[in-house]
Figure (spheres, rainbow, N blue to C red):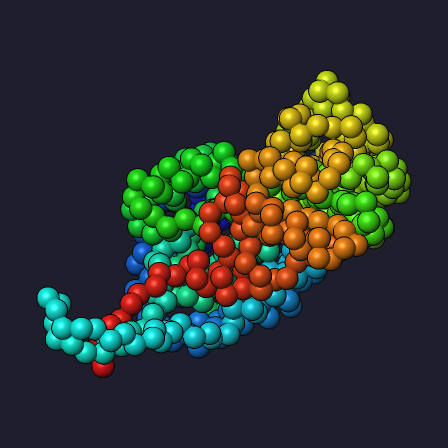
Length: 483
């Protein structure tokens, strides 16, 4: 071995054709490890290995697949500390987040799908009159979930544990085989996941991992004729390009794309709850999360108080080394992304927004940090209000009445998760139903992990999480017979 991370193809650890590139700790700017650069030929070989393994894996008993996922969950839990240390170093997440929300959630997702659920449903019998299709009779029917086949899983950099686990676990539970292409910024954790699955007994070719900075690797695992479905988490722009390729070959798609979550805060809202929820944008993954409430719509009666309290909240957050237990805000993933976020803050200034707090780099010697930033007096036509910044930046826009608030919230290319804060629960639910978003948090930013997850408009295609992920990674077959 050359000292870098090998690829995982066909059950074997394989040296990459393109050598290795360094993976950088965003907090220290030091090298964490060396990630492999697959060639397009190796990417296609991974797809071919998954195709070869599909027949036998799809015919295994669901109970056997569930047992394997359960063993993988136990292995990941047992290795929580070293796996979380690597995740923290690769992503810049705080240690608590790496343990609980990255590796911990991944283990929980494998455990969630380590259970056999019914894959057949009886359809109500139908009485048919005699005609060209046959004699009169009663037709019985059964709907059966079948695996799609080979699934390419392209995962995001902000959570290299929970995101791929949320794809791999339900895909395997349904009898699919997978080729995983992790983000180039932090792929090492995904290879540790492959390691855990191999140790749990996954057959050769059922799980494959190939990575690289060159777009040709992603293009190869999307365009391969061996692939039946692509599950992608990432930007809308990349998702659109993937969808074009999938459309040519009629491949199934599951797309979880960008977001610009609107948070409507009404005059009667519990401000402490709203501030704590919106404040997660400043801290959780340093705003590098598509579900963040980044676009705050505040009713005028509460607007000034909300801006003041969000300012106070942001100013109290400790920004710094993710290894320190009291750190709340870690770095962004890379110097390039930091420059992008900073350019948006400067753009906001030029557009007329007021930088109430933040907007500068903290006084730290190393690391790709941006201070939690609040832009007030914004309008919904500003680019900072319309485009996904993906950093610890919140914009605040005032509105007068319910209809205007809903109209502003819906005036967006995105529609992943929106939020409503109001003391009037009936109004909160009424407003939520009017929002064009795949999910709405009502007086909370919490999630129900069995609820369907996905977006309207340019925020995605399809739904996953819970039983909806089993639907997403399956085809439905109808069996019909004379009763």
